[in-house]
Every structure is written in structure tokens, then in C-alpha cells.
Amino acid sequence: MARDPVCGMEVDESQAPASLEYKGRRFYFCALSCYEAFEKDPESYLVPEKQGWWGRFLNKLAKASQETYGNKPPKCH
Image 1: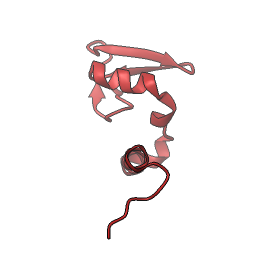
Image 2: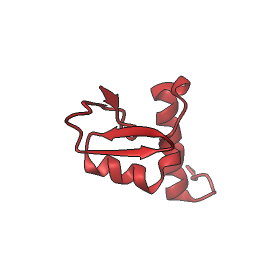
Image 3: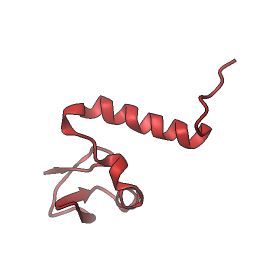
């Protein structure tokens, strides 16, 4: 079993709808949408394993916030 680098889902390598080799590593994806997201910006999904799921979640949240609000933080008041 492999872990989809985009969503974190476990994927059976023999049943994966898509796979990609990047920087000498083979990545497997649970869906074509995850494959396409990884293909657009692979570096954003290459998080050190030590960081764990919480760190990956926070990185995705920060990236989504930056895409939505730009370099300025959102105003809450």
C-alpha cells in the first residue's frame, strides 16, 4: 500500500488510477483529481514524513489562505 501525497488516502499500487515518478520516487494516487493537483505543484505536496498529517493539513490551509487572500492576512473585523 502507498499513500496518496495529495489527500493522504491509502492506495493499492496495483489498483491506483494514476501514478507518477518524481525526483526518483513513484507516487500513487487514489483519483485523477489528486494526480492533476500533484502534477500542477508537486513541491507543495512533498512534505517531510516527520511532519505528519497535522503539519500537512496546516501547510494546505496556509496555501489555500494565500491563494484566497494573497499576501495580506484576512481581516476578521
